[in-house]
Image (cartoon, rainbow, N blue to C red):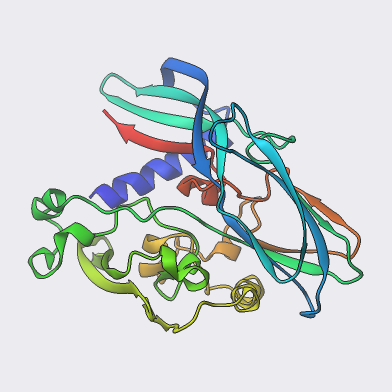
Length: 315
């Protein structure tokens, strides 16, 4: 199954990056320092007691017509949301070769946390009260082609669904709350405004996956997954979800596959994963948070897994 292969590929890349002493795939060709315009994720900010707090934010954005990013600096009063703008990233384009037959391409971001760098972010709490923040993914929801679904042998109900609306893995904005990306709860205008289908594994009596069922998920006002929202969630509403997640877990999931199979032992919610990333945190009064890698600010899917790869495909 394609979903299983791509999940395995994500895990393989992660293990390769962590265990540098293990055997690595050979790099047949590499093109360094290419550039591309992506987008920032969103960050919501509020004071911990809901009182107005003054905050200064600085981060890099790309303006069409410019050669490089510029630094955007603003003073804001909580609650507020930042992000979503375009930003120019620098990356290496790699071709990996495994043995004699398997080849796959991957672009790898070159992280840059300095001013003008794509990952530069500074949040200064100028107030006398602590503030809290949460990162909301801004990834595009993509779909498998209708032909792929029609030719699939493992989707048991493929003739009962709209074959053009089956979510492709990996894609979609993280995290997932009750079958909807959190992004659509605060920015419903970004939702596809239709019913999509998400694949859910069917487990055999032996414990393996014997097939998939396409589950209908509405993503149009006012129905977002299992949530009914006639008006957008507030910044405080969103932060409450993240606070619950980082207190007790099992609230927010990194992607649709993890949510749909959340009962399995390897599909953890975002606070249960053992990564350096923090999608929620606090900044004490008078203190400054500078991104050194703990803030996932570029809208790549694998960034939510603390990985710098994007746009992978196999020959």
